[in-house]
Length: 103
Image (cartoon, rainbow, N blue to C red; front, side, top):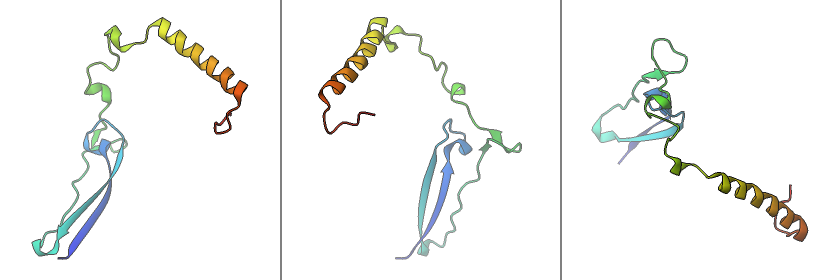
């Protein structure tokens, strides 16, 4: 069975998806189907005035900043993380473990 492969790099934003992410699409079509596959035309563009503009993420998500405090670190937790990083640097400098990158 022979197959014809069609390969295209597709940017999701060019099709109305609110993310600029390129993907490789590989479509295989059997020869016995006598079909010619064509990738769909893009519907959106960042610089073509004849197409719709790319969709911004804030157009599809109500709020990018959550209002519920459970999604935020407390001040105490933030200070703990800052202090832990300082302690970690002192600890590594003191013992000089050979497998660690010290830069």
